[in-house]
Length: 362
Ligand SMILES: Cc1ncc(COP(=O)(O)O)c(C=O)c1O
Image 1 (cartoon, protein in one colour):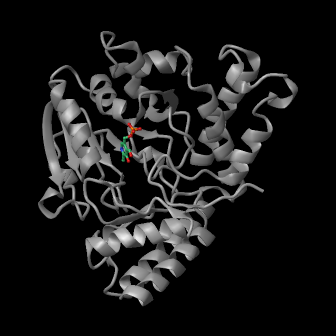
Image 2 (image 1 turned 180 degrees about the vertical axis):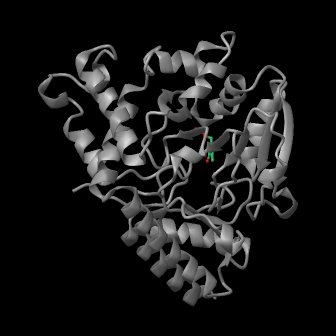
């Protein structure tokens, strides 16, 4: 059996082993066809079945109603920073953002660069993005095109645990790092987007789930590959889609269903996070960086007493087959990303290692 280490990478990140094994089994000869899925036309019957089934499985696993379109795009979540305003707002129109860290900031910069009237309605930059700010829904400008939030802040380790009630104003969420980590009521959102490479599959494909009625907003004069209406109109086959990545998303969705669906995934994720946070809260050696009530189920960020100890921690963890524990280069410290495919056993191994590291160095 292949050696598998404990992978706490922030993304691209660990994928479920059964998914990789199934892909491997059919890599060279896709279900008796004598060639790989990667070598097939995206217009052929075989790929078409994979594509259609993946969308159907996403609808089923995530309880996405017929009021919503499911689209596959490329360009990562970063392209969505431009696509969202280009499609949803009139040229120069008013757009609302909550700034909860680097990825929100980047989304805001992109919209500003394109000439939209940026209004920051909430932010946590005053305290190094260690918390999720309250959004006063009653005071939101109803003339704006939408409100954009980043549901999980991969770098800072914070996450929304309730959603702002925006009424008729579409709520747009970048869910790149927490999509499918828990049960989410899709109906609360106008649009959700996520790069696949944390909880959904490999990099190279971005998922967009949007209210069908919003498709009418897409202007004709924006680039076709950013145009939701164009891509939705062609069932995400306007141009060559990342076929293999979409196939892998399908396998990940089947794996989620096999685990008992999102309620079961959420339960395990809560257990995993609780174990890690309990260790961090029970000592002065490790210090969590995010406000307790806003902590992320997916990215657990913490500091050690000194940068030297942090370096040693990451190095010794790597020696012990635990990778990806270095914090993002922009903030330092340590971070354990515990996405869906990271198991309770992976987290228990990390908790044991952290306890033992403290005993030796505390
Ligand atoms: C919350 C969030 N948004 C956006 C991005 C950027 O994604 P991409 O590299 O797919 O453009 C990331 C990457 O880690 C992220 O964590």
